[in-house]
Image 1 (cartoon, rainbow, N blue to C red):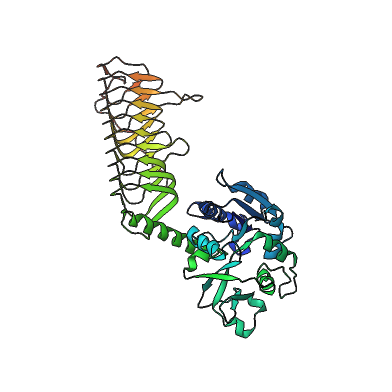
Image 2 (cartoon, rainbow, N blue to C red; image 1 turned 90 degrees about the horizontal axis):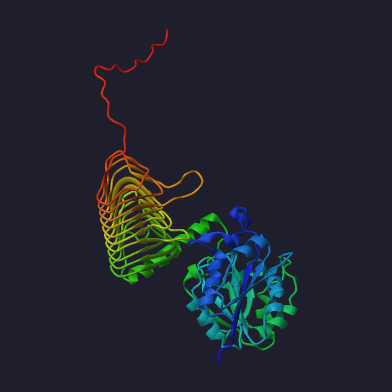
Length: 466
């Protein structure tokens, strides 16, 4: 039976080159903090626990990070910060000797769980194992020194390396797995006699070899998986790498992307079959796209469920926040429409240009095609809601609901002052302000009488003296 894995995440650094008051590990890729990506990867590895080592901005980092309920998440602080070995020493009291310690970096967000699983399997629960990579230019990285038999003999930091060692192109990624019972003893032997006067975690390799323990290495060729973030430029580069990875995943599932380079997922996106997504679309929170959904260019969609056959025309903004948004099968939305929290559109509903819907339910076949507002409303089947019409749902202190029953026609430029009910099959004349509920089938008109003044002269602008 394999040993349990406990993950240690090093997240104490300041990130000076980010030039930000935000701790480096809380900068975001794909809408999630860098360190949250690392924790989520540990969860997919079925890790028993995660220990995050914090330092700079510790309280902020600790408040921001979350783990699944099945996995323990604990924090320790590294103060002062005296190197990577010193960092892991802070976590040792929280690690059980029956497991394996997997060391990850909080600013390396795109490591794949299957890569980490291969690393764990290589160690077989008995040997330290390192994740390594060949780089054309390894400047600044620790070099992996191998023996004649190919086993790892040491990791030499760049500043401490000889010219011959600096010629080595295989570098240590910063990721290792070590049996915890062995790691505990090797950490106790660390010293800071080196060019940086720090306690190097990499020295455990030297101690392992001295104790006759074979050190193994899993070498990969995907640099993105071990790339860290130290600057806004690197953050942007990894953002694009992450989005390219997601785009490839969705296209393999059959999603048609007009341009994979202009596609952003900043949360969780679930797609059915035959989904089409045009350029410059952003998906945030949790979004579900049913079979045959089509998304036009330049749309932003967050926390919404779009059912089969729905079409979202360009420049539409949908944000369900906590309440969510539902767009029913075959519905048409946009262009330039806005659906806010609590919008619930039934089958074949039409929401047109410059129409805003908030906390409202529209039954099958209802239409609001242009320049309208529906807030806190219940709209029946086949309602036709005219251009420029609004529900006046707020009295200055409280929100009230408007009910528009089935088959109602609301003319252009009407104001429905809630609370009010428009009876089924009724009609509201254009330009009306309705303050009282109407009977089914009635025509309601509430506007001032038209007056015409013949030969009326428009006021003239006064000429300014020279």
